[in-house]
Image (cartoon, rainbow, N blue to C red; front, side, top):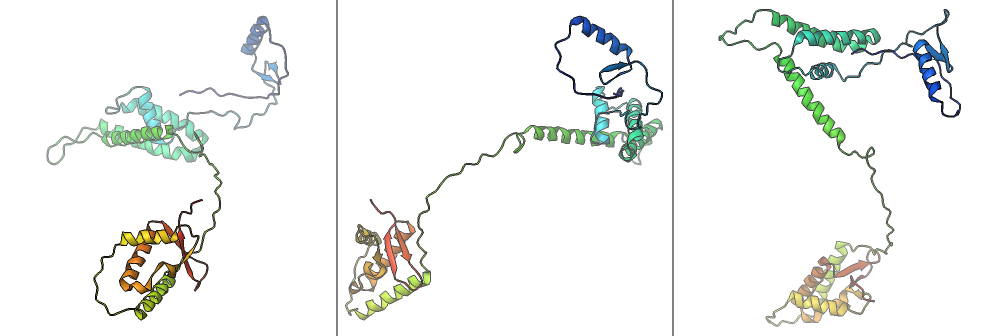
Length: 291
């Protein structure tokens, strides 16, 4: 992985000039092959004796890796080595050459790579020694097995990360569309308190008991029928007081069925029960008011 350093001595904004002739281009190529560099557009054939070059000016730009495993996997895949049978001698030599370049620039970054280099040297040393059989007589495990396992796992994670990176990302590949919709602010009547509705019902029961007669009768009452009666009473009227929907003279049974019909209509959102404020009269109206 040899990289040639690039020295930028100086530059200035070029002026707008007409296209050069072919002879001028050939002459410039000849000058650039002889000149050391260009200073403000003019060829420089020799470096000045008093030229000072800072230590960081000659920067070697190396290929960036995400860690020791990434570098090791790159060296193996670039030369088409079998990852299950890694030639440690060649890989270790190339790995150490790269680490030496890193250590010359950034010692802290090289520490992590040096740890992997020590591991490669240890594995190579173990491979040079004669293998020892285990206590049960089985063949010993290949010293490279743990390293191969880590490389395969890292390669799988790297490929998965690459596939995720190719997916569309919010803010990078697309933006979330926002649409403003104007909605009419319809007046919302205050909700009826459940306790007020209960008190109104109790008051109706008291009035019904005062007018009750001691007649034993059996009457077939239908909730659906009373739902229709309530809707007829509300039809064509803007608001109807809660008590007007009941007929206490017909007895408690009719009041109960009418009240159940009223609750069923409210559950099906066919009517609305409203109250202006606390302890105020309760009114009922159709949920849909025809024009």
